[in-house]
Amino acid sequence: MEISYKATFIKQYNKLDKGLQEEVLEKIELLKDKNNHTLLKVHKLHGRFKENYSFYVNYKIRIVFVWENSEEVILLAIGDHDIYK
Image (cartoon, rainbow, N blue to C red; front, side, top):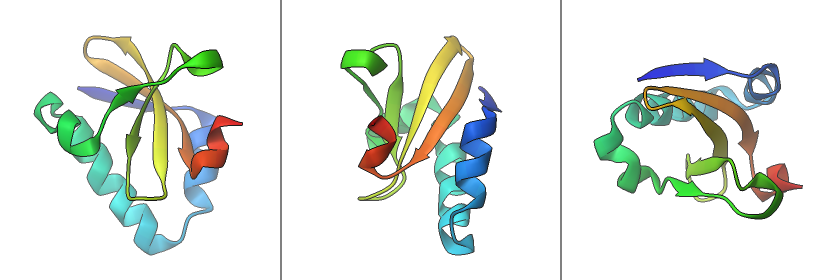
């Protein structure tokens, strides 16, 4: 699976502390294998984000993404629940 990054995602990622950045990279690697999606709690969003999906990095931090096609994901945003606002 191919992973692409929006500029907003990169900007938000760069603001995270180094330890959390490492955890994010580990979770992104897990995302590449569809067998890990249950572990990451990948789920479809609702409302104005109904075209997007999300998964958890940890209890607080999540990543919002969109499927470009069956083998490509674009990471849109990372942060706590406020990223949905």
